[in-house]
Amino acid sequence: MSDTSNGSPVVKEIPPKEADLSAWYTAVCLKAELVSYAPVRGCVVLRPYGYGLWENLQRDLDLRFKATGHENAYFPLLIPESLLIREAEHVEGFAPEVAWVTHGGQEKLSERLAIRPTSEAMIGTMYAQWVHSHRDLPILINQWANVVRWEKATRPFLRTMEFLWQEGHTAHASAAQAREETLRMLDVYRDFAETVAAVPVISGVKSAGERFPGAVETYSIEAMMPDGKALQSATSHDLGQNFARAYGISFTDVDQQIKFAYTTSWGMSWRMLGAMIMTHGDDRGLRLPPKLAPLEAVVVPIVRAGDDRAVASARELAAHLQAQGRRVKADDRDESPGWKFTEWEMRGVPVRIELGPKDLDAGTVVLVRRDKNKGEEGAKTVVARAALSGALSAALDAVQAALYEQAQGQLARRRYLVQERDEFLARCRNRDGFIEIAWCDRPECEAQVKAETTATSRVLMPLEGESPACVVCAQPARVRACFAQSY
RNA sequence: CGGGACGUAGCUCAGCUUGGUAGAGCGCUUGCUUUGGGAGCAAGAAGUCGCAGGUUCAAAUCCUGUCGUCCCGACCA
Image 1 (cartoon, rainbow, N blue to C red):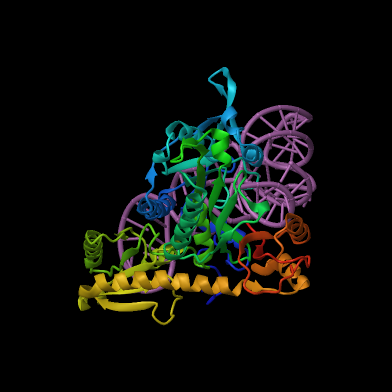
Image 2 (cartoon, rainbow, N blue to C red):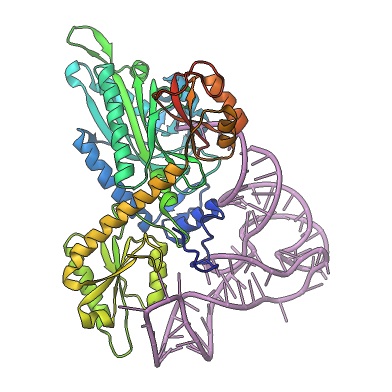
């Protein structure tokens, strides 16, 4: 997928992806103008092109939330300490990462206010006020918000101190309904990742050690990055009655008994964009899936001396496509065509439409797909201008499909089902990818693996007839576990 | 939070060892010629050397502190 036709990088600030994924990733995020570092440690500015990605993610995911019966609302950023500490495990889990507001103006506050690291405490408190009867349930609310977590090591999208996400919070009358909701939203995330971000994932339940603080069960979708590390891309938590007890969400049921509600929470952040960037990018820069790309196509006019038809024609073409709802623009800047080609490839635009004198004479345009290498079969096609709309649509679909297919191949190559303890530990240490084994599901065993390899279980799945002994410790196996080093 | 590296023009970096007038390439501005894979020529503009102290006649250069970025680890959902 990468351009290795000549030794030097196309965009000199972007090192080869293979050589140093970290350096490649940071360079691409900055060069493609997705983000800039802000004058605050660990925070980034999401620039218009990066925000365009986020808006497209938001729009698609939001439709899916609405389609599953949820409504949006907004809750306060600041959470009184006394509320946050109500759920013991929850506080303990988040304590190291909470930022505190201690002063208002010159005046010291009588109670510290946490800047939300997540909103279970705030939303739980409100749900307690709103829920009295089984008739008030379920409550199905989502909020799009920013949160702050005091992180020590940060990277654009993957881990920043402040980040954008959505957090869904629901309350139900029964454990079964809460579990159903948790799994439903997990599947929404899985489908979104695969069909929109074109990032294949594995999904499943988390081990006890990897569970959200305060949850009964945590589920996640996990993507595999090119360096063999897993990237948790969304989570869905069945909170049982833990938070309902802590925050007093109770209701009178049909049997006239007062019961605690069952709650869930689920979230996807802009980290998903990081997964997408790392999964699809190549040595020329970003490759964006059409469904998320801020620009689906860019029209590059090619001017020739004494022939200035191309610019006007490109503008007209772009306007025509925009009228059909396409995210397209004409690049009429005073730069050479080659410069624009490189620029838009680096920024990941899925399709380029070239429009030069030859095309103008012939009534054609040239379509170039970003997912293909230069000179590769099908990379460039000449289409009649009258057929452009359909051809563009087909090309976008093809790019979307090809990116997913390539990513699926990468994932498949990094999945290993292992029977031997030594091979398991070696592959974990070696960062080979998802290493799957029959596993005992004991915290002590996981701690042992982590100490020896720094890998942890990412998700657990049902056993599929593997040997009944844990590959690590030989105790009875209860699940199939997928181990990996992770971001 | 520990180990390592780095902050000099918009970008990539040289200069620092051995203190003495702020440098290069790319980019930028203007003009002309160009334009189907990062164009050419000419002229021009542009830097409190991350920040704050200290040593010194003199600091980008030496010392201390601090802020930030990157890499490796620890922590983390």
